[in-house]
Amino acid sequence: MCLCLGANWSPEDLMYDFIRKSELFSWWDAGFCDKESWYLKGIQDAFVVSQLRASSGLRICEIGGGNSRVLRQLASKNTCVNVDKFEGSGNGPQVIDVIPGVEIVRSYMGEFDSALEDASFDVVFSISVLEHIPDDSLGDCFADMARILKPGGRMLHAIDLYVHEKPREVSRVNAYRRHAENPELGLDWMEEPAIGKLVRFHCDFATNSDQQLANWNRINSGLRAVREVTQNCSIKMGMVKAG
Image (cartoon, rainbow, N blue to C red; front, top):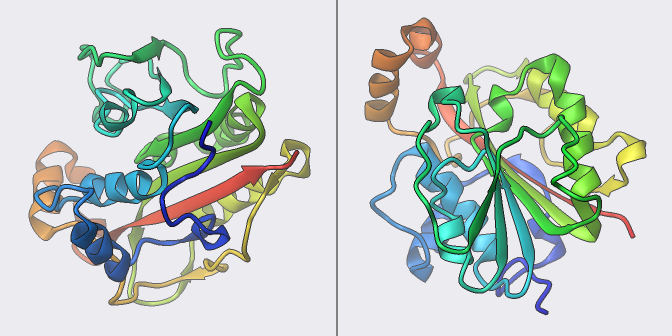
């Protein structure tokens, strides 16, 4: 079994920071992600693939994967599970596109479903999911994800965030960190998180395109005013379970 998160995995790959343009450009240069996927989910896919592309013989669980793009790339060499109820939550799919080698568990994290056994996965990850979880459910979600991780297992998340140019405290950013650092979960950072209490946009952040934001306005116009004055970026979160 190869318990690695990528050919060049290092402790610095477990983090709490924003995805940067330099990283995205290097992933494109390496040729293991799709340059045509210029929207935010494509950027987030590239982050996760950069961590997992060399994995083999692992049990990997994607949270809210829908018709997963990433598990398609991992299922031939790993045992993959997609935890999703396919109820269309967060503009997700309601019809399952069967992916060979990927098991579907119709559940949500935080329900502590017995179909997902304790300490049964080497990797748990999500892409553009955690930002959709209600504040009062976030603690149970992190607890459930930690529950199904094996000791030494890795947790990876790519999380959407609208970022202003002026520094401001974002309660949701602090909530992710607070729940992840709950000592009862046994999760550790491998380096000091780079995101502090105050968050502001920097020009080296990888961002969603304005065209995609305009498309989203047609789906959900309620956030139009926010999109007009922010950049849509992605947090990258990585932790390891002690053991």
